[in-house]
Length: 157
Image (tube, rainbow, N blue to C red; front, side, top):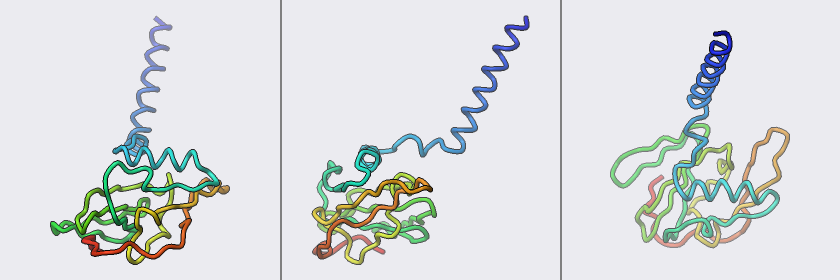
């Protein structure tokens, strides 16, 4: 009887801990797309190195815009996406049309200081991944000085 009560107590405690953990961290722990998963892995595996966004994408694009916290992305359909404090929005376009949008948590790699008028071309979307500082924050830096992406954006700021 005592053993059964103890096991039930342990299982209940673990279940409650898992539910609380899911509610707090839940959706952030599981990447929502192949690009998000690839980007997280690239940042994690390249501390002190450089990552190329073009190497991580599986779709064709000619411009990437970064929307920083507290900004709003206005899509062609009139819908607006507000960017929260803990995330950045990476919007990929091809020939003026949006082809992909990635809502990326800053904890996994912070693009918040990388807004650039004109966006990034596939060849210029290269970022340095610093070794984590004491706060464990990964603040990415632009790795290349190249002119902004050419052509109409179709990506509304």
